[in-house]
Amino acid sequence: MTDVVALGEVMLRFDPGEGRIRTARTFQVWEGGGEYNVVRGLRRCFGLRTAVVTALADNAVGRLVEDLILQGGVDTSLIRWVPDDGIGRSARNGLNFVERGYGIRGALGVSDRAHTAVSQLDKGDVDWDAVFSAGVRWFHTGGIFAGLSDTTVDVADEAMAAARRHGVTVSYDPNHRPSLWAGRGGAERAREVDLRLARQADVVVGALGLAGTHPGQTRVGADEVADALAEVAGLLPAAKVLATTLREVPSAGVNDWSSAGWSAETGFVTGPRMPGLHVLDRIGSGDAFAAGLIHGLLTGAGLERALAYGTAHGALTMTTPGDVSMASLAEVEALVAGASAHVRR
Image 1 (cartoon, one colour):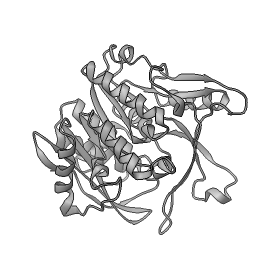
Image 2 (image 1 turned 60 degrees about the vertical axis):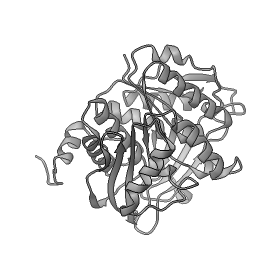
Image 3 (image 1 turned 135 degrees about the horizontal axis):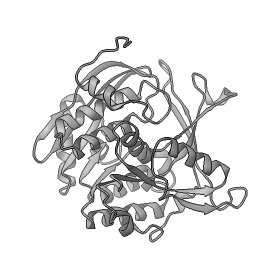
Image 4 (image 1 turned 120 degrees about the vertical axis):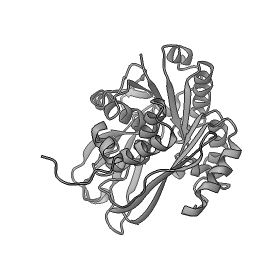
């Protein structure tokens, strides 16, 4: 039986380490993708049984992605395999080149993901009733998957509706990527899609992305977070929990890191503050936050404790390279309890 299912794209991430994409001679290869990173963290750190619904072109690159997913312990049985035509004319696998950044130079992502197999998923391609009738407890998807194409919006909508029919808790992360909407309606269209899908969610992660009139438009100060989440709650009457990371970026290598949330039961709640957090690689930290939050909510820990799990897991994920978490539950629990960085022998 699977605890958590995610719907999203899984790409190969090419990492030049401390160098630059445009001058690299070697890359380390990881797997990654916003929605997938969540279930990968839930499996490897928190021990839940997870699966990912995605599509891959059936060639050596796709099988490499599958092998990396298997190494992460995530169930691959729901992957839809698309025949390979030899050159990726009809369907291909996505690539993502990512620089970590350093000091005044911010992180940089250059994705190569047009016409991928997963972007061509359409309504009816997945038997969602079969997926959710097998005891699934939680379903997660987000704005990255929804932004891949016009059809993926409908697939996300179809999946979320099916999950709700089966009594499965649904979470959604707007996770806005301007590059996905360029030439396709831009921020206005992204906002329309996010509201359409988030209104079907029980839990919205990255909820501040829905504040204001366009994704990412509103710069929310620390003293404005409570009001901004209340504004979002007004837009999403069915949502039970809203959560968000809070980040200030003095430099690529040092971030002030925290979180906040809202629920109908608790009202506004803040997570632990981690000022001056040293960052090796920030990519995937928001997904790691979502994984910790979901773990806390699934175990009935309450919103404040769930925010602590998410904040700690996201912080630890920023200390290692790649999109995916390398943290253990013991490390997360220790950080939540106030552990330091002293050497353990």
